[in-house]
Amino acid sequence: MTDTELVDAFIREIGKSEDQTLFRQFLPEGVAPEDVAPLLTEPWHEEDPDVSPWAPWRPLRVQTPPDVLKAFYERVPGPLPSLYERLILTCHWGEVDLGEFRLLPNFPPALDGLVSAIQNDAFMFRVLSSHKLVQFGKGPDVDYDPVCFDLNQRSADGDCAIVKADHEEILIHERLRVVGVLASSFRELVRRTIASGNPV
Image (cartoon, rainbow, N blue to C red; front, side, top):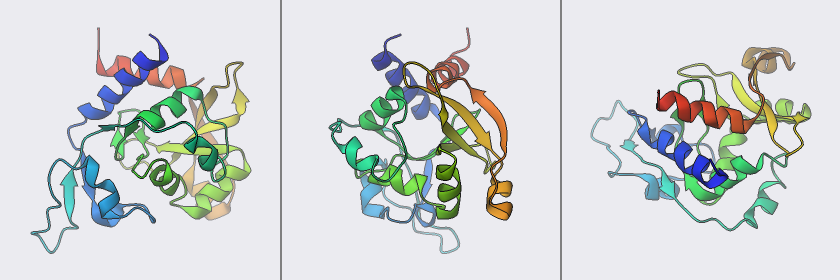
């Protein structure tokens, strides 16, 4: 597959999730309800006072100019793998569980919403960044462990190993403990995610 085909197939996987719901109270700081409106397939449901307003969403194809990456990298360590750059410039989405990991949201406006998601836990962001790790996901379901690009482990093409860190070690002891390597590269993780959604 070409990179374009990989990104297209990965976006289709993002769109397959059955439970694609945004809760307004869980939007990252700096992301306003009106920012995510283009992703919503229905207006916010606000009829139950005991439940945060919620709405279903779907991935939204976009064409973000590559020059926004310059501002992105002023706020987030990098560079990140080119396949991930292509993905974030091509689509907006909410947080989605892809089985092996949850993908952090890439909310509008272009890359500002993604920065808000990456930096949502300022303490976690600071500790991870100090070790040249950039979070782009979490463990599956309710697993809060950050899934990260390890900028220390790069291949010749600039891709990075994908590692998972223990969030409690970071938040309680301000210490990094890598609990696993999910993939040798983002490309490998993308291919595996696509394959898991399309069993032979």
